[in-house]
Image 1 (cartoon, rainbow, N blue to C red):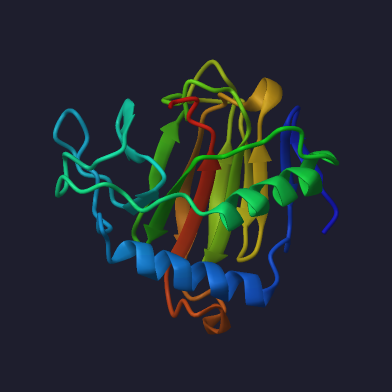
Image 2 (cartoon, rainbow, N blue to C red):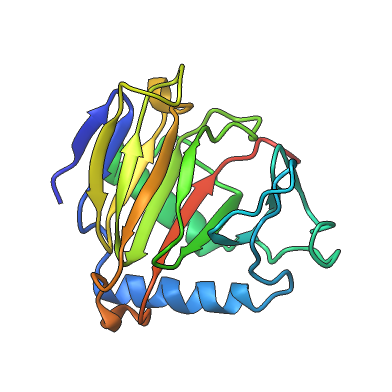
Amino acid sequence: MTPLEIAPGAVHVPGWLDMAEQRELVAACREWARGPVPIRHTVLPRGGVMSVQTVCVGWHWQPYRYTRTAGDVNGERVADFPGWMGDLGRRALTAAYGEPGDYTPDTALINFYDGDARMGMHQDKDEKSDAPVVSLSIGDSCLFRFGNTETRSRPYTDLRLDSGDLFVFGGPSRFAFHGVPKVYPGTGNPETGLSSGRLNITMRVTGLT
């Protein structure tokens, strides 16, 4: 579990989650996927539909904004962000940076990728805070592309994220473009409780009240 700095402020910690932690997260994500706001394919402003399926806790995300209720789905308030997840986020920052600072995440976006799902290059910039993003991977491995803060194109670094991996990006890399060009079906371990596909959990600080 040696941290690997991919770019300033961007750190990959392979195999950070043990199997028991992965199973617990899969079980929690399954519960959130049922509601109160169920998992869905997000509709983009120009009418496109994301290939990943998303469910949120703490705050509901849709492109360019966060709300407490999901007006684009069923109007319900999303599940609360649990305290244990905040503890997990601080542990993650300690693993990546050596200390957690005052990290207090208040939302998590959970994305489920089937074998055909992709995520184009994008910035996580709908938050009013520049606190780091904590990303956890469970299930099938993926090709993760981590770029620069100026453009969706090169320079970027491609790396493989496997089940249990942690990736944190903050500081100079907080607003770097990143995406998932490919998932590798059948590479996950069913012992996680996930028979197929990939879960990606990203914790953020919205800066909202």
